[in-house]
Length: 155
Image 1 (tube, rainbow, N blue to C red):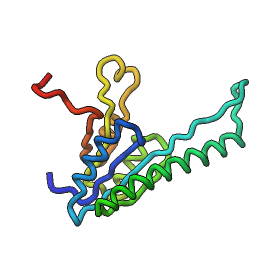
Image 2: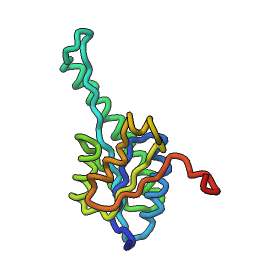
Image 3: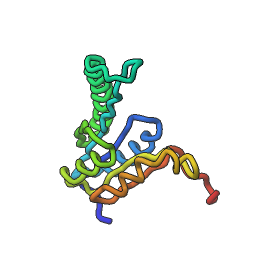
């Protein structure tokens, strides 16, 4: 694989994404490389006790979610720029795997970097894996980085 010039790092700001963030920054250390830091906004739908949507509360909640995401994204961009990396933030909407794939295609990413929680077996089967769905949707290679390092000695 050629050295990537445009790296899209997809984050949900979780602990699982920290190892992937470090890897994305390492990959982006070339002076000709651009790092795109992407987050997909997940908007919960507030419901009344009767199960009906509450529009005003939904607007307030959406604004709060957006502010938190912008602040977290800004923090990552500041960290990247402090390491002298060319970095741009992307706030996306929609299903995470589809939004990441669209952004990778639109920005012509050479690679997507995403963290994984390392679930296996029944938990992964029941909960699914956003990383696996990104791999299936992305128009370019995807590097998945586990939350915790693999044990030494192949165990």
